Length: 77
Image 1 (tube, rainbow, N blue to C red):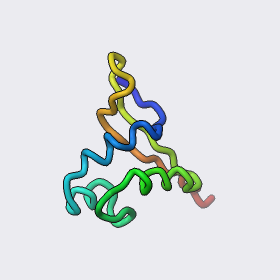
Image 2: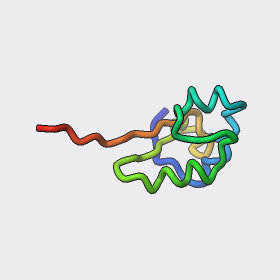
Image 3: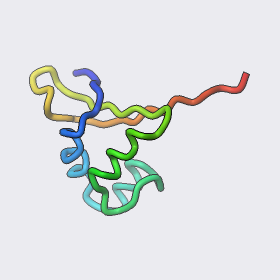
Image 4: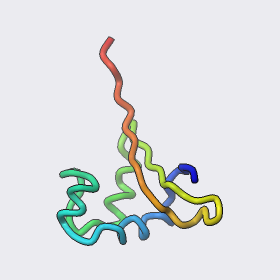
């Protein structure tokens, strides 16, 4: 298993994992609104410093098993 960059083709699978408002809040906090849409996830690609990744198995690179957004945070030095 490994992480690869999330693609538009992954969005429907990810949206399908979220069954209700409470699950969405656990998934992303207040950042997104119920009902979750592919468009909401796609718009996150425009956020500076954020990158989206999916966990996949080598036997099926097109079937996401997990998802993570990573934010770059500048530390004050």
